[in-house]
Amino acid sequence: MQELNQSLGARRDLWHKDYIKAAQSNISITDLKKLASHNHYRVRARVAEHPHTPIQILYNLALDPHFEVRSALVARDCIPAVIFELLLADQCPEVRYELAENPYLEMSRLLRLTEDTNPYVSERAWRTLNTISQRRKNTISVAKSVVADKKCMPVNNCSPEEDALKAETAITRKLLAS
Image (tube, rainbow, N blue to C red; front, side, top):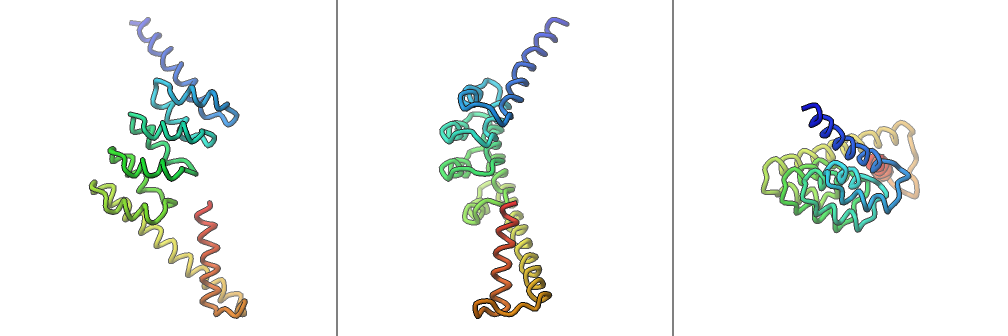
């Protein structure tokens, strides 16, 4: 029994080391390619999250049989459109749910998710849209108060409302970038 436990522990250590390796910022593309076909899904998921993983590997991981690997793609800062389309059409509702939680997803894609056949995905997309809407309302009120507090004169013959809208746009961009 002790030998079996040691054997299982050794196997776990093997994938665990690869999991840690896949997260290193200085990992080579060759190693990422090798780890992208690892037999343990957690290692492949870590490769999917890595910011330097090439698009060809990302595409293959978007077709991975394990849903957690595909879900890990959603956590990336930048996902190519072709991979987004694969994830939006994913058969697994957990993957689509992850997308529906993403406030940085394009509005058109979030709107598509509000029509999802899975009620949890649809509801989550509506809640994300509501959050974005509330954030936008708060940003507008903050931008208007900033303009009013500074008693700004119109810039380029713009009304104070137009200045507030420009400020709101700039603040929204900063919020979305952070």
